[in-house]
Image (tube, rainbow, N blue to C red; front, side):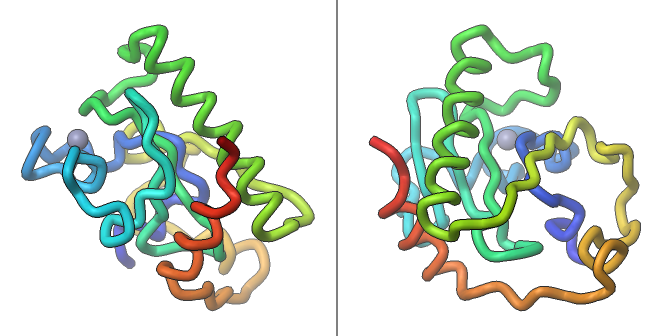
Length: 152
Ligand SMILES: [Zn+2]
């Protein structure tokens, strides 16, 4: 199973933190300054937080809000990072409601490699719950919709 399938709605980046900061960390690479937003599927950039599409979405609109600094633990966030992270989550909810009109939104946080709790390679959430795999829309479409719907 691909690493990304372990994230239902990943609000945290610890799943990737076995990698060193910078080049080795996929999330640091995605939100690095100068990376093309469309290429990286970066939906939003704040000063210290950003929102990116999950490369292995459970469903259309599956995204991650994360600090732009390589931080492994929630309690290590500085207050303004924590505040902006939560602002990003709030804006993501608005954008998802605007773009997709979902019946509800699952919001989760991945703290550590085995969060929720769950373990690398365990059962896919949608498969476990619904015994189906949703075929999401192309990420470029999701990116365009959420960029357009993201609140100012
Ligand atoms: Zn990183």
